[in-house]
Amino acid sequence: MHTPQRKIIHVDMDAFYASVEQRDDPSLRGRPVVVAWRGNRSVVCAASYEARKFGVRSAMPALRAERLCPQAVFVPPDFTRYKAVSRQVREIFARHTDLIEPLSLDEAYLDVTANTSGLPSATATAEAIRAAIREETQLTASAGVAPNKFVAKIASDFRKPDGLFVVRPRQVEAFLAPLPVGRLPGVGKVMEQRLATLGLQVVADLRGFPVEELERRFGRWGRRLHELSFGIDERPVVSERPTLQISAEDTFERDLLLDELEPHIRRMAEKAWAGYGREREQHPERIARTVVLKLKTSDFRILSRSLTPATPPDGLQVLADIACDLRQRVDLPSRTRYRLVGVGLGGFADRDELAAQAELFATA
Image (tube, rainbow, N blue to C red; front, top):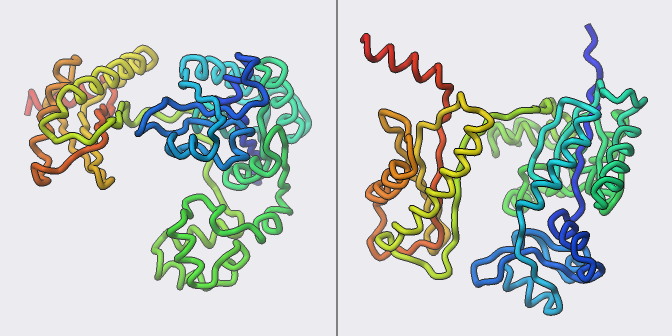
């Protein structure tokens, strides 16, 4: 039986947080807006297109953004509002397909191979979605249409902002060929440099390079790179991913010693427990069993310690106490300073599964 060619749309809201701020405050329109808390350790959550012209980008230190664009208007993020708009956009997606895979508040994959709105093509569906977003939220979105997720995501970037780019199955290889290898998912700056030393600078170069040699140098990832160069990506759109971990973390104004972290750990435990409460409202059958403590040293080394107690944490106090105790398993010198702490809950299992395990141990 022939499997129909997938039709995937990647929708990406344009400068989402900054655009929401400009929509809700007319005085910000046309001005360089940077969504970020002020402070030495703050990073940029989003930048309007006016700010991007000065080189301001998401995840950049806020101080650097201020230097690049002194006239920028800094606005603290308001995630409650952004989540509300994100839900609106998600409702628009749901009119066209049940197969929606959110990547964040502002982007998602949609599988419209069998769309539910009766539109004749994936391109028409993407146009309808973009028009509805514009009309109902007064915001713009860009979209890429392709036979798989990886190509659709690259395509959505091609006509930003407020654009649509379509890559048909027969066009995939030609579309990818001239792109820098850095456009492939998972190829960061270091990997890009390693590939450049082999003379591999654009996607087409990867196709002519022996796959065995790629695999010898980079393991299974080398074979994956070879597949991506031909536009092969069989990953399905996964509409409901179970939560793997709920966590909260904070970067300090100044680096702290391990002994100074307790109040911050307890504060992050409180936030993580609140997030867990929201998760339980939606999925009461899922129970978190593991407590995770995450630390980042002043020299950016990340370490985590975890514990799965005999009975799942059943309250904020228990969570916070376990997270604080996990510091005892950090074996770095006592003078080590830390710039970030995080507390998480993971190891989710269904309540019935836990009950069955408890019964098994009780009768063993």
